Structure formats: C-alpha cells, structure tokens
Amino acid sequence: MRDSIGQSAPVIEAKGLGLTFQTGDGPVHALKDVDLTIGKGEFVSFIGPSGCGKTTFLRCIAALEHPTEGTLTVNGMAPDAARRARAYGYVFQAAGLYPWRTIAGNVKLPLEIMGYSRADQETRVRNVLSLVDLDGFGKKFPWQLSGGMQQRASIARALAFDADILLMDEPFGALDEIVRDRLNEELLKLWARTEKTIGFVTHSIPEAVYLSTKIVVMSPRPGRITDVIESTLPRERPLDIRDSKEFIEIAHRVREGLRAGHGDEA
Image (cartoon, rainbow, N blue to C red; front, side, top):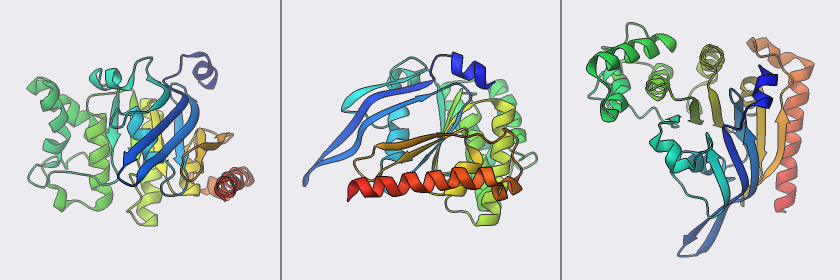
C-alpha cells in the first residue's frame, strides 16, 4: 500500500503556502512557506506549540480559511471546489452535538442538508454508527453518552457521506488518558477499515507517533514546518508498541523538531 501511495497523485498539496491575518494591531503571520504533500491513505499528524498554525492549516484545507500566499489543492482542486464536492469530513475539538437531537439525528444532519433520500440516510447512519461501535445508541441523546462516546458520534457524523478525507482537530484533547488511549486504538482500526486519508491535529507527542504514517512538526508563529517524519512503525500497532525502541526514537525526533522550532523563534 505504501508503494501505491507513493505513486498516486497527491490528495493534499501545499506549495509556498502562507496566511496573514490583518488585525487592528497589525498583520499576524499565521503560516509561512509551508510545503507539504499528503498521499492517498496516509495518516498525517500535525504537532507544534499553541498558535503555530496547525489548526489554521487544517482550516485552509477545509476552505474555512483562505491562504494569502502560495497554492493549495485538495484532490487536485482548489479547497472551495473540494468542499463543494464533499471531499472531506471535519471533526472539531468539541463533539458539537445538538442536545435536542438523538445520536442518529445528529449523524443524519449533514445528510439531510445534502438532500440524501430518507432511505439512504437511514442506511448510512446505521453503517457509520456500527463503524464507530455505537450500535444500539442511535436513539440516545448526547447527554446520555460519555464524552468519548459523544466524540465517536461526531466522527460518525463526519463519515456519514463517505468522504475520502477526514480532517480531525484535536478530537481527543479534552478526554482523560485512559479514554484517549482506547479511542486512539479504535481510530487506527477505523482507518484500517476505511483507508481514508486523515489529517490530525494534536499537542501530544505519543499520540502523534502512535497514530501516524507521517508526522509534521511545526514551529511557533509564523507557522512553518521544521520536520516531516515518515514513520517506520508497522500499520498494526498495539498500545505497547509505545515501549519499543523504534517508537521512542521517533518520539525523540519529534521532540528535537519542536525544540528546533523554538530555537528559530529565539
């Protein structure tokens, strides 16, 4: 699969990407000179200090922000065109479920907006709830589920229209370590089953190393890429792989990349 990834056209490609926000206190340079290629089926994590542009870059991919320099393509299209083509699902930091809707109703919402038939909605909701191990919870309301289960419902909602790309902005950041570990394991299984291309923002070095085929290390503002690390870990990863020498070496390189970024700032 890695060979086929390398030979396929890029799913996401940034060249010389920059984004400057104009504010009352002067310009804020959020991203600068970002060059990155993401291939089909890769799991790419973005890590760096707060304010380094991780989420901003993800939002540029999703056409929620618009670069002021360089180029960015998603499935060979401009991000706005990719959004209209329903190329991606987006999972935010908070689950963002409507409390007056059932879990099935929340998952169904984008399908309703997109005009899917009622029968297709029911089939897709049933399939994605099963995919995230929420069978039997469709009639529950968000407040009846744990935080981890709510976040799984949020992932199901992003998967409902079967986009090839899944963008995830620190989806497990607010959860305790035990729940986070379990959801990391489940996310890897989900990725293996769906073979989607995933862009994942995190502040956690162990999480980035455990999940990713590629780790993008970013510097403090203006956000630049200080290192791109191709993981040598096998695709099937039990949690105890985090005690392996290979895992520790990759984590060390991530840490060094973060230090280097802070050094550039100084």
